[in-house]
Structures are given as C-alpha cells and as structure tokens.
Image (cartoon, rainbow, N blue to C red):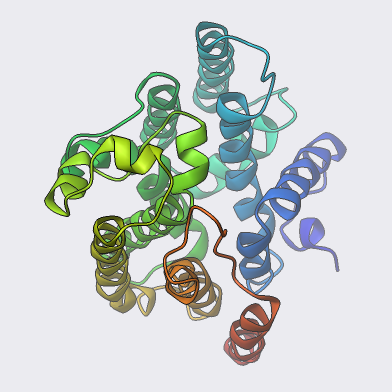
Length: 300
C-alpha cells in the first residue's frame, strides 16, 4: 500500500498536492526526508505537507524569483502567506502546496498560530540581517524552527504535553546547527545569524567575519555555539521518549543527523569558510540502519 492510501488520502487533487510536497522534501531536505522514511506510511504524507509549506516560503525568500527586489519578494510572500492562512481558516485550498497543508492542519488540529509565526520569521529574513543578542535571535528562530517541532508533535503522537517543550528545543538546536555550518553562505547573502554579543564576547567583530578567515577568536565563538546546540539536544532527548513509540526512531535519527552537523564542523577543524560541513553517507547509514530496525520493532 502506498503512503497516501495508507493515510486515507484518495482525492486526486489532494494526492497531487501531497506528492508535490513530497517532491520538495526529497529534493531539498535529504536528511529530513531520510528520517521521514522511518515513520509509518500513514504519517509520512503529513510531514511532507509541513515541509512543503516551509520550503515553498523559504524559496520565496531565498531562491524563487531571485531577480525580484526585496520589497517585491515581501509582497509575493505576504500575498501567498495570507492566502494560505485564509485557506486554513476556511478549511480548503486550491494552492498546489496549500491544499495538502490545510488537509493536514484539519486532520491533526494544528493551531494556525504556528503558521503565522513561521511566516513572520520568513518576513523578518527579508529585512533583518543581524541579531544583537541570543534573545533577539530567538524571535526569528521561534518562527523558523521551534514551531516546526510544535506542528510535528500532533502528527507524531505524544503521551505527555512536555513533548511540546522538547520539540521546540530540538527545532532550535537544528536551526542553530545550520547557522554554524552556513556562516560563509549567509555572509554572501548579507546575513549574520550568530548573535553579535556572543561574537564580541569571543573577540570577533563583523569585519573579521567578512574577511572569511578562520581565527582563534572565530573558532572560540563557534565552539560556544556548538555547545549550545548540544545542550539543547540533551535537554530535548527526554521528550522524544514521550512520543508515540512508532515515531521515536524517526526523531532520534533526525536529532543525531541534524545536530551531528556540529560534529562535522569539528572534523574540518572549524574551517567553515573553505569547507562545507556535510554528513557523510556512511554516517547516515550508521544512524539510519539501527533506526530502521527500531522502527520495525515499534510497529510490530
């Protein structure tokens, strides 16, 4: 039985929307997609729907119509985002991505506030290029990452409300790991996501970052951020055990692979300006195979 049939999705237009979300997931979120395969078939399409919504909004900000000015991109994002939110309120959509999202939101009663927060952060990305403090950054990260975890919990299933707090922390850890890996790429886009106060505490200024040359000060700043990722991951670990047993292997694998980005940064000796830290195929297999066995046992 295919995933959509297992999830009870039979309408042709709705199936096409879910398939588009799955395509976006498999194309752009390879690690995320791999982890999703560890879920029971009936849960996977709904995770794809959440990813499809997030990815499409991200494309408007960073990739889609790159010739547009920032005000033009802001208008495109605003029009599209408001339409999706309106569709969620109405309970129906004709958007090729929104149709699957609305169906998922209805099935699992996911609060619309999570999607409003996400769109707020995507809008911030168009005009905010740096963050003074960690607290300032959290306004952005809440909407861009923490709410993704909150959206996921109803789909994954949870035995305790404390799972939501853990989901937020894990989502933040994923985002911070990406920021560490992508410092150079983000500089090219005119953005600095590492809090400026944290950088200054390590003796790093914006000019040093712009030079794209690893210094002892930059290395110390990265070490500080890496420890923050690992602390959040540790704090979130107990919450994974509160999820439906059939969902736990997926999230354990995602935690290991996403937060493992910082391990790869260490392996390249923090040379983030000349190398891109990547999770190797071997590590993915090393994580995925035991997780697959655990997933089969949980379903049995």
